[in-house]
Length: 109
Image (cartoon, rainbow, N blue to C red; front, top):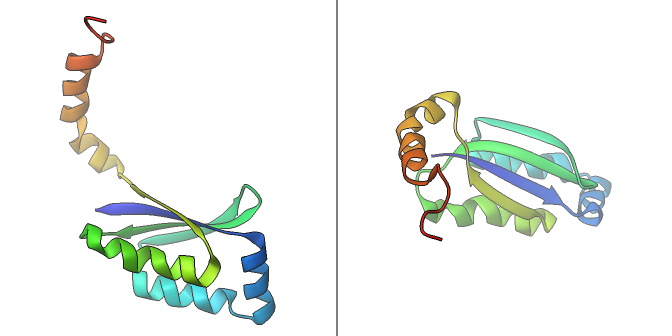
């Protein structure tokens, strides 16, 4: 399943990695293991943040995905399923079913 991994580094941990010269090489090693479809980096709430799209086959992979970020950068990690436009179109029947069942608001309340 395609997932979106968001990793945010506390400023102090990022600064320490930059000063020691390990920020880029550590991120590269983690991403080489993860083999993401795409990885983007930006600022979010004043912290260095990565947005990484990858395929997760089994939930047990979560520890191998999250722990390197925790250990290397004391990062906060958020993981969410992510859909392509095709995935959204393929899920249209679920949307239609929900609209029929719940689209007119809660009944009986």
